[in-house]
Length: 153
Length: 153
Length: 153
Length: 153
Image (tube, rainbow over all chains, first blue to last red; front, side, top):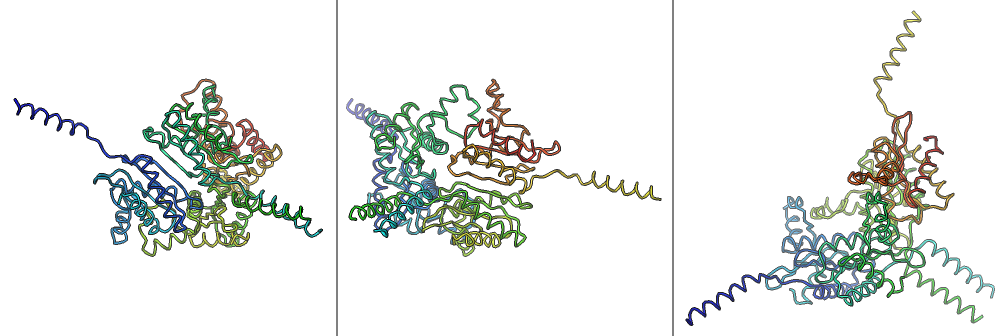
């Protein structure tokens, strides 16, 4: 009897766990904190950039264009975030691969320029950040600083 | 004395000249204030929306998606802002015209749904706001509240 | 006397303030002068080109296609102007970077072919010019000649 | 002998004419005259518009945006000209048909708003004009005035 009850309770809890099937999410509060950290870093370096953040579904949750940033960065920041999200890796990895000879990768719908980083929580992707406005290396520095300052790296 | 007056007149005329050859702008600080006012209104009504703001050139300067907002609103908010900017009028005007029988206007590349408003300063367009997420009438209430709270209406 | 000085200082400070909150613009008169200079240079070299000019918001203000110009240049001239505007630099810079090995830049939505130049006034971007029709080096010569002849370079 | 020569010359010239198979064209000079006439009419009415002209192939040959014109008119003026060219008729005809109940026409890729007119020479279409910026009726007045002033209507 005891054994049956134990089995039953165990079954229910396993069932509940399996049924829950949730994913961690990136809400506006978290995105705002990440963007604030990015902006703070940019200001401290006197750099002007667009900050773009996607959520766990790869959909835009926040975009900010700092004064004086080149207009082209509005699209580039989003494209970097898109590539980082869609391939769960830094856009710099693709940049390095293409620079290293993998030119065929330019035929993929990716933006292979540093400045895009995926955002992970408990090893699950919950979004991405894309920075554009200064050199791509500087864009990358801002993206990394933003994730480190908010505990996502 | 004469010299000072001459300088004064010169200053004024330079000012006038500069004014004729320049246009007022919408920077990130102003856009943030408008977005904050929009978000405050949305929260007070328990509505979830995307807030999108374009600058004096019609280029995106800020976007925020409140938690729980339908994903389609990311694009719609930007399209409403685009239409309000490009035609210097509320998107509701187009909505009302089409509802009133001007069905031919649907062949134009516009988004004729309430929730988009142009932003004026000294009778010059300096940007626009687009809200999407709840009913279009409610979207419009948020857009108007945001501009009124920040002195742009 | 004191009053006049006060007024004067006030005028200047208002002027400065206005300047900070405004941006210089490229109107049709200026655009026409630039296009006329471009066309004059093209005629003097017996070259046929499309001349495309964007304003301070990146929006098309003028386009002219000289007789006999290849049709593809209608779009290319606009795309060169777009890239020059959006990234505040000559499209030749991107062309040279990619030729020099930065192949990953081809994954960005840019037109990296000489013939597009940003137009600056008081160190602020007020538009751009895009030329297409002959060789890209010749397109670049026309763009540069146009800006030099009109005092923008 | 004279008769034979005359016949021969006549034959050659008829043959040449038939063989030539040319079409009348709209060059930049004609397009400029039409645009000047449109702009003159607009100025006389204190209206701000975009003037767009396509050639005998339906390709853009000239575009001018008058100061203060709404940005959306850049695209609309071109779309009106495209519809007028592609269907060899005034865009007002489509507007009237849709207003009159032919709502199904909105599913066609046309811009059914007054302000677009085809340009004919010897009963052959050689291009089109599209005007946008004021009311569509006023846009139409400018388009018509431009073609009448230059002998194309």
